Structures are given as structure tokens and as C-alpha cells.
Length: 140
Image 1: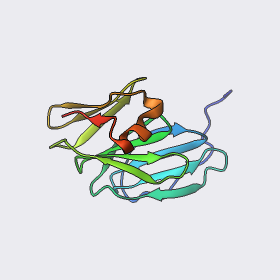
Image 2: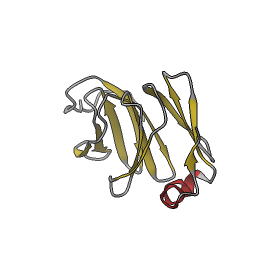
Image 3: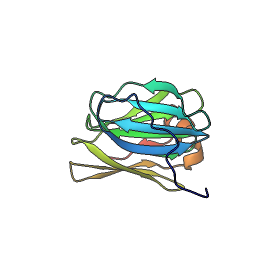
Image 4: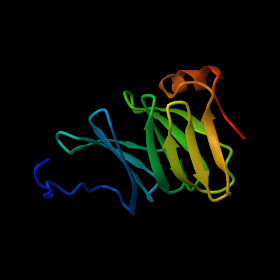
């Protein structure tokens, strides 16, 4: 990266873009329009529009092969980065989810409800599979 010149402007969201994360050659953008768009980093074309949140998407984090999206709808959705399918909806917050961060063992979500929920109990690299079979849980 020798210079910081604008290469292209990505368009498509219908409201403010408030979250960005990159993983596996793709850019993920979360918007107040309630969607997560997936962009190819090489072509800069939109590959997919991930729908499911009923409120604005405020935060994104990549962990264990999945993209986690936090929303004002009080949920965290877990998207498989390979298939772009929603693998889980993590509930438990009573306020908007405004922050997500991942460590080697956990995914943390911060909310307007003044709490931080902790997802894990296993390594993040196996978190998706573990959630599916109930080993990992979203702590209350």
C-alpha cells in the first residue's frame, strides 16, 4: 500500500454504513438498513446481501470462520463466511447490541442493556460447530 488514494466507492446500502470487517478476501459492511453486504476484495463487487436482522446492524467481528453481526434488534447473528448462511441467532440482550470483539476463546457483545454477554466455552476456531451441538453457549 504505497498510497492511500480512493480506488472505488462501494454503493448499495440504503442507510448509514456503521460497521466494517474483512475476512477471507471479502469485505463485510453492516448498515442501518438492517443488512450486511459482502464485497469481493479483488473486484469490489457486491457478492451477497445478508438479511435477517430486524433493526440496524451496528457492529461486526470475524472469529472461527464466521462473521458475527450485532444489531439494534438485540441479537447477534452468526454467518458462515464460506457459505454466507446464517448459522445461529444469539439472543439474550434486552437492548441494542453496539459492540462485538473476539478473543482466542470467546466472542463478547456489548449492549445498551449495560451488559456484556460472553459466547464461548470452547476455542473460537470450533465455536460454530460447538454452538450447533450445544457445547458452547451464550452466557446470561
